[in-house]
Length: 253
Image (cartoon, rainbow, N blue to C red; front, side, top):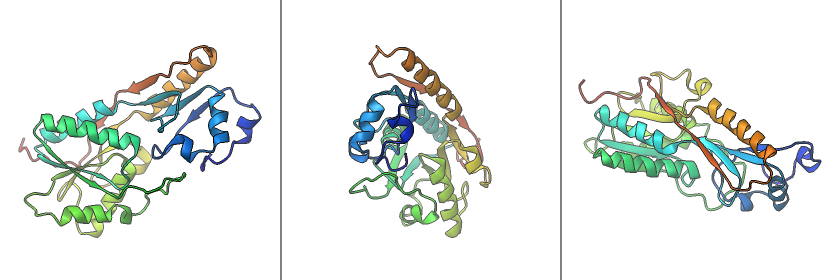
């Protein structure tokens, strides 16, 4: 239901026993979705994928952002990066804000400095959000990094999604820069079809999306079988780091 402004016929006619939901995680559920859709979904068992938008209820199956942030901080520290940027053109998303907070906390434990490179906050949110499909979506943030004195620039950049990493690769090429040489890059999600053609291969945190999907189906079936249980439950899957060539080793070993 891309715009969340209508109740789809399969839901209105009671043709399903439950639903699995995914939102942009930016914007309030009860503000961005129509009251009719909010009410229709509340009447059936449902499970949110990856995260639950503000004001929404129900179960959620997601990645353990704290574990992923710790993996990223440990990896960058082990590779000798002391100044890290956090780049996201669309701040305010529930998952990315949590990731930024967790990563900053773990980075500080290692004595790393984290600097945000983020776009402006959206004044009003309407679903669907426009996708970031061009390097122009990240170019102002890259230029902000380039404008810093070389001695104080972050040597590595963390981005919350592979879709952002793909556009950062393209933006760097347009500026005559190379990932892994001029700026190291570490991402999240491990979307294989999306990152398959990147050179050097992207180092990314695999959120194990297939496992998250499987757990969501299992949880929905449980919800359908236990209508009397109304306590919302969150299931988190521990991620794993997939090493590519996008992070330079500055540690010398």
